[in-house]
Length: 151
Length: 119
Image (cartoon, rainbow over all chains, first blue to last red; front, side, top):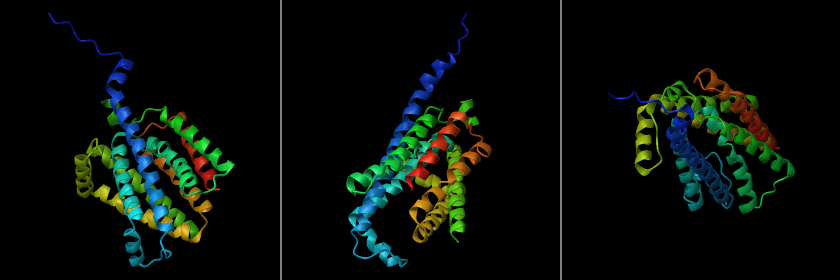
């Protein structure tokens, strides 16, 4: 006679099944933030050292793309778009939006370190608010749609 | 004219994100390995909602560029961050995501941070 198999306790089930997906979600968040931050930095660095200002003429943009820093920046931003898509395939939109907003803070920090831009006290307060909000959203389940809950 | 550009930026960003979130959940889990990116590119090319989302993204990008060309960044960034609220509401109502008090409060904190960052 076989004994009926007991379903795992809810907490255990979530720990064993959801842990790898959670880790994957945060890995994609980090990758996206890094790619977006450094992509924008390279783009800003590349366009700032161009001899002429960009105008509406397409040739100016094509010329800009020939710059290695601009080309690398565009490549990183395209890769960041794919990373965000992969993220949206496993996490809620209302989770992804605030969590990836840490990128705004990274952009300010990279601007200060590499482009020597000024970061005022108000901007540090903004960074604190963004970190706080991100931590709060990060503590909620990353996927709450009906499909995810029924799995 | 500036509010029209803000409206286009916010609406196009929100629509693009909603379409991506909806369609990518239907397409299944995606990855960013070399094979995963190739598969994702094929998925995007085959699904009309994803193609439409890329078109919306382009509209949002050019509208934002036009906005920052004519307005200070300290106006353009917080004004376009309004898409946060629109998208969270739409995610709740259209995508049936559970936006509880913690997530809503976190989103509002982030929005406040973005508005301050642009000052």
